[in-house]
Length: 280
Image: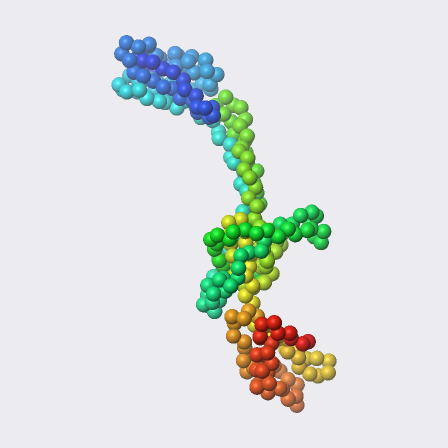
């Protein structure tokens, strides 16, 4: 096969971006005679890298056997790698059953997101700019206060490629993908951390948390030997805890008399009303 020849018309076709070169071959019994040396000479006149002789022999063998025009790629460049923008890998946090039962109702009441972009220096000197966006469609996940809801994957720069002539081709420029955060989210190192428990909303270029704290309380022994109840009513969609549940966590000193369940229930009912002020 080393001395194979074929007849026809052969031309070199270079792509517009100069990332590919190919031979366009038209078999013709009365056409020009082509061998390995002739193909190699044609390729070199276009300043292309030499093609191995065995590859040229395969092309000639096909030219000798076929009756239809065909293309044969002889050189490819290395395309540049585009940069990768900053992304967030969100954790898949399923909703507890009690939140899932009220999810749609809470989201209807939540309204559009309130998003902010920080200007100036970081820290206390930063100035927040409030932005309005059309929320469109968005996904939801459970957000637990202090638990990482997502990981920030930093942006990666692109990489130069090379065309068929060995010249560097820069990567394409892409617009930085800005991610706006609303209420209830903080950035701690490379993680997005909710500052409140609730419903994480993830939209196109934005995220926030609709607060949905559950009722919480603690009981502490004061200096005067009295027990004090600290109570946070949580979201209005949650039922308030009964006095009996709170009494289960109370450990009064010997001889101490607790308030009655009726008195505590009345106080909890009052504190759970919207706009109620809880006296310290």
